[in-house]
Amino acid sequence: MNIVLGPPGTGKTTKLLNLVEQYLSSGVAPDKIGYFAFTRRAATEAVERACLKFSFNKKQLPFFRTLHSLAFLQAGLTHSQIITGQKYQEIADWLKIGGFYSDSTEQGPYKDFGYGDKFLEIINIARIMQQPLRKVYNESIVPLKTDWARVDYVNRGLAHWKNSYGLFDYTDMLETFIERNLAPKLEVVFIDEAQDLSPLQWKMVSLLQANSKICYVAGDDDQAIFRYAGADVSHFVNLVGDVTFLKQSYRIPSKHHALCNEVIKRVVGRREKSFQPKDEVGYLDWHRHSEEVDLSQGDWLLLSRTTKGAQQIEEEVRRRGHLYIYNGSKSIDSKVLESVRIWESLRKGDKKSADDVRIVFKQMLFNTEVAYGSKSMPNGEQGIMYSIEDLLKEHGLLHTRPWDESLGKIPQKDRSYIKACLKKGESLTEDPRIRISTIHSAKGAQATNVMLLTDTMRRPYSMWRKISTFDEDEARVWYVGLTRAKQNLHLIHPMFSRGYSIPTG
Image (cartoon, rainbow, N blue to C red; front, side, top):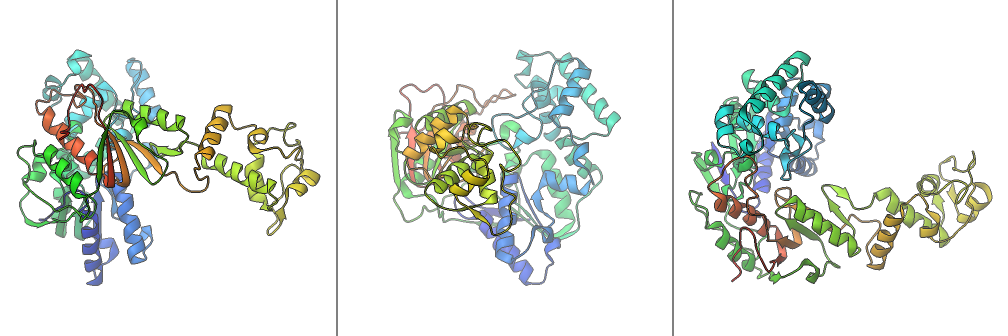
């Protein structure tokens, strides 16, 4: 076992990809290298970086994926066999329990795995932690909401339904992989983000290691923030093998570094490590309210401990007239913004292609802004460009008023928002500069500027179990949040804090 320890910004993924390059250069075939990450985001980043660096396509790297994706592939499953939201509702109807809330928890990668319901949470946690359901139930806060008989009934009913219809949930994928020993035979295996793996996933890693000649495991126990969801950070801490410690952070300035250390030192039983900040002091400031922070320039990552906090940030950013991305979605659909840009370009005298014209026409109301009829849409002959005069004469355009009076299918609230964004100088062609996220969802992300809300609920970590190490778990979460900034860190510290406090001095 080769262990790569890397504090935030030290280049763990880069280190692993450099090792991938070395093995490729030595003659190892691309399909004999496995690179497995905890989250889709990390796996996607790894395969994209590898393809760019080595001039491969994704098909040449079949084993660059998440562990769940690997289990899906090796088990030969189809998407029709996977339990989706609709299937969960069918099961709930059959069980006569009303419904499952299977969309997500508020915190991170498990949102795709059917969690979020009080029954599904505790059943899945017991399975991925490899513990008896009754034991996990007794240690959980679920008894405050429902009784054991109810949990047991749902568990047995869910298992019966899946067996009857040949369906799988995401935990079933891992169990099938392990039971059938579906690990591919590989030359070398890389496991990224290993601190976040559950006991069930560690069993997968053991099989992968046994079926490969060389195994690398990379991570940082100080960033283990998914213990509430069954992650077993102690397994990572206790790993034995040849250790490579990355000591230089290329992201964290010295001011941020000092604060981060004050937070993480509250964790006991961690792998002791120290690392060097980059050669830059950085900027760090405290504010009473997020409105004090100027978001008009640069790239930003706006973070909250909770989904509720992130939603409040979203409301404020929208009110201030900035474009943003939240939960992977842009605040305004790109096609809508494109229609505004194209329309105003036409009004200035530019000519546009048929495809561009169709984008505009799709946002116009028939018989009010564009005439209804066969000539309304240009046919799209290659190379033909259209002026606004062409559209007036031959394609049913009825007037040339400004975009907010011409694109009537855009809802009024969105029109007002776009006008506010344009007034702020926001670009309609580039991706939004601002990303909004919970800390859990932002793991692995970074930005030049970070704003972090430091207030929290009193017991945000008690999602399902009675955790006595609240302070340590919270220290890890805030440590992750505090280490996302490359230059400027703005901390929003309310007058009254109801939960975990971050040192201010």
